Structure formats: structure tokens, C-alpha cells
Image (cartoon, rainbow, N blue to C red; front, side):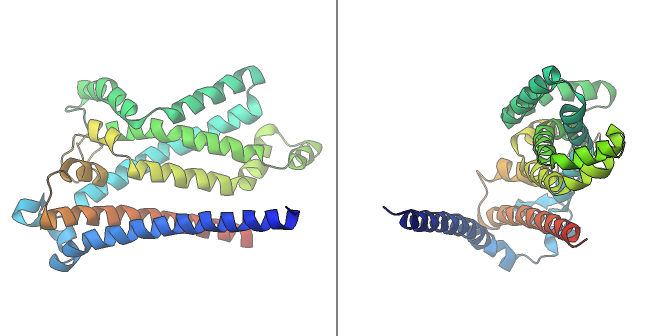
Length: 284
């Protein structure tokens, strides 16, 4: 078989895989819209925001407390995990000796592979009782932030480390020739150059935090409540779907699919913002 023919076969195989992936994504989105259609047609959109609570049996479908809980838990975890992950990658790549950097990477890789239910169980038996000693009931937004931080930290650290490894070596040589300090080189050259990879890390970590179910279900208290402080219990959209989908029927079931659409919209908005940020950098 000629080389040209092998290349054509490979090209069509790649195109087929790309079409299959796109088709699966389209079918998932279509499925969500079809299942959510009864709620969208029978329930006014304002009810999902203005109803007095989430009581589907009584015809109340307010999703805003759970949406706020999801956003606050995700934002809190990102605010803690992003600087920790990026700075740990900086330490591992530019400051730590090989005898420390290699075991550290292996530890981060191990943390990235731990199932979410294990993180949730650890949070349930360690974090929740610890918080309860100071501010009952313990199962709260703060517990969710702590567990989610530990879950997304490895993602940010590993992708940041890979992004730093892809920075051209001549950038470092030029900085050394100019007499720049190590931290100045990192802050002024390495971080701006690795910005696309860092944005990717934040996007992936945010996606995992938004979509996490089991861990937050175990530690956040599962109370439909708009939190006024980090010590109050919350219920996220994903936890609500997991808790109620087994017995939901009619508009109740369709409203849970509306929750899934809300999560999908959040992820799409996040990806668009990341693309715009990378686009502004390329045009700068």
C-alpha cells in the first residue's frame, strides 16, 4: 500500500472519529432539550427564579438557591485551588530539586486519580466534624469548598506543570542573559507565555467542580437554601438531580432536566469566555 493511500485512510478515519464525537455531543444536547421540553412549555421561565422554593409536589420549581450554591461552591474552590495549583507547579518546575520534584509529581498524579466518592467520604468523616466543632452543623458550603478544592487542585497543578514544560527554552536563556531573577522570569515571562495552558487548566477544573455530584452530596448538607455564609448547608444542582431523579415524574422530572440544561449553559459560557481570553491574547 502506498504512503499516499495510507494517509488518505488515516485522514478518513480521523474525520469519522471527529464526526462521531460531534454526533454524540449533539445527541446528548438534543436529549436534554427533549426531556426538558415539558417543563419549558408548561412552566413559565420566571417560576424557576421567582417561586418561593423547590417543592415540585406543590408546583414550586425555584432553582436559584441551588444555582447559587453551585456557583458559590465552584467559585470558592477555584479561588483557593488556582493559586495553589499554579504556584505548586512553579515550585515543582523551577525551584524544587529533581529528588523532590519527581515524587511530588507522582503524588499529584495519585490525587488526580482518586475517585470522587473517596474525597466525599474523607470530607464526611474529617472535614464536616471539624467544622461542626466551631460552627454546627458542619455539613456546609465551606465543607464543599474544601473538598472541591482538593479535587480540582491536581488538575490545575498537572496542566500548569505541562504548560511550563512547553515554554521555549530560549526564553529562559534570554532572561538569564539579561540578569533577571528567577521570580522575575517566572512572573514576567513564564506565566504570560503559559497563559493559554493555565486558562485550559482553570476551564477543566471548573467543569469538574460544577459537575461534581457525589462528594458535594455527602458534605454540603443538601438543604435547598441560598447561603448567607459559608457555614450554612446548601444543595447543588447536580446533587438535586442525583437525589430526586429516581422518583421524579411529570413536570418534576422535566424540571430536573432543566437543571441539566442550566449546567450545560454554564459550561458553554465558561468555554466561550476562555476562548475570548485566548483570542484577545493572540491579537495583542
